[in-house]
Amino acid sequence: MAERDLPPYRKIADDLRALILSGELPPGDKLRSENELKDQYGTTRVTVRKALALLKADGLLVSEQGRGVFVRPRPNVQMLTTGANFRERRQTGVSNFNAEAEAQGLRPEQRILKVERVSAPTDVARLLGVDEGASVIVRRRAFFVNGEPMQLVDGYYAVALFGGTEVEESRRIRGGVSRLIEDPKGPVRQRITQFVEDLEIRMPSPLEIDALKIPPGVPLARVFRTAHTAAGQAIEVLDSRVPCDRHVFRYVIDVP
Image (spheres, one colour):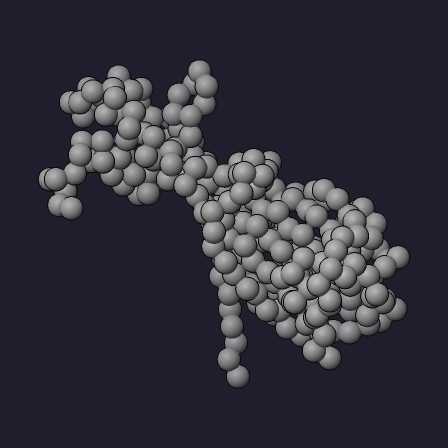
């Protein structure tokens, strides 16, 4: 459809979207009132309201009761994944998520929601190499940046290896489970040599929308990350649910 054929509300939405994406309307900025926008564009409040609704559905605007409409804050975290930074951060005891967020001047936080034994879901059983329905330990966590929810992460572990260890305790593990896996005195005593990530993009469920404060129209990335040891054993599966409006992922793949 040519620009001249667009309905008026689409033209207003496209104009405001361009201002937001260019940074002329930065995150947190308050938009003019509907009356002011109506006069600016020479149209009606109904047309302006339709334009704003479209941008809210795109996740670019948010309404605050009694305050107005604002450009949605976007505390993006750029996640860099390499073997080198995994090793470096594993030695410091700081998780990759926390280290990346702090390096960008952000305030990260991880909260443990629940630690329990469950029957292995189909996808997890396949990736972890256990029978479907076998008992596994799951550590459910929520990650935040500057107080805003960023992702939900469920870590799955075979009971045969991790039953009765720190993995079953409802507290943070210094250095993460990877430290325990590679600990010469730990339950596995093997070096992690490979991560495999399976990615799917879908719309979020109502529970995910609520927990992650996902605006209408924003899809969710679900990432299954499987850690393998030098012996080829799948030792950990992380099931991460990540809103697509607040992360930038960068993978560095060294090709021999």
